Length: 214
Image 1 (cartoon, rainbow, N blue to C red):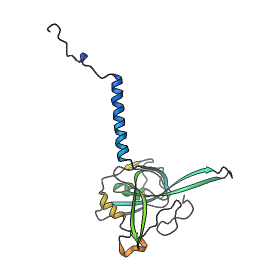
Image 2 (image 1 turned 45 degrees about the horizontal axis):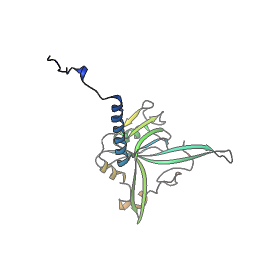
Image 3 (image 1 turned 180 degrees about the vertical axis):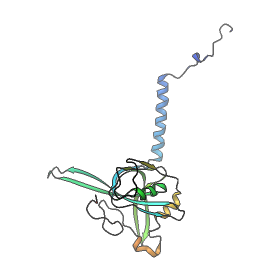
């Protein structure tokens, strides 16, 4: 090798200094944070119990849709009276595709579940009145995990078994979700559902009592 010529062996290849690598990593993190801040994140995590058995139906394309009523509770001690108090929130959860079929087979009233989904608010007309309902949709990116055994199910999965959503066309599934709603003119009164309240409302549409059903 001529004198004065530097070797290009791997030992002489320079790498970024640790400080530079840290700066590059911080830039990537900030970039991801910026993307999340611009686009937003719509994610809901629930751990609760079913207020009644899942309602499963099939839409015209053959896909399954399941409606769940999931209760989450919190308790605290009243500072003035010293008594324990409890508040229960009811959540409408909609599963699609394979998840809906699994829910119909394994889940029963009182079963505890872990849910990952996203919020979606929809509206419909009920005799000239615009009604709104907020649901938690568990689609292809969602997760359902059964915690413990589901009493009354015909077959039992492994405890803690987790299921992920399968591909399901959302537009058709969304139409199926509203199939029983006010869009079917002949069923306007029967299919109309009130906006969910913090406490389970009375009526055939929900089938709940004032007490926690488990």
